[in-house]
Length: 75
Image (tube, rainbow, N blue to C red; front, side):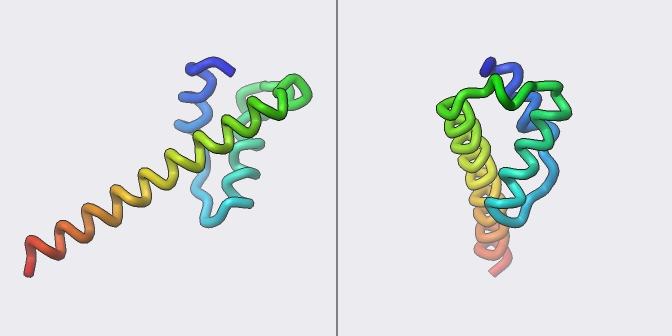
């Protein structure tokens, strides 16, 4: 899968509160991008899911970090 597809996929993902919702959001987004899921190899799908999960985790950690630093500054 190209980097462009990865970027487009990440940009359009709907919010997900757990891993199952995230997987469903990824599949929905792939379909929105007119990507035939039968042409995506298992390795590509694993890489894609891993990448998306990592991006979400980084985003969550950054949000928590900003909150923590905000509390530290305020106190």
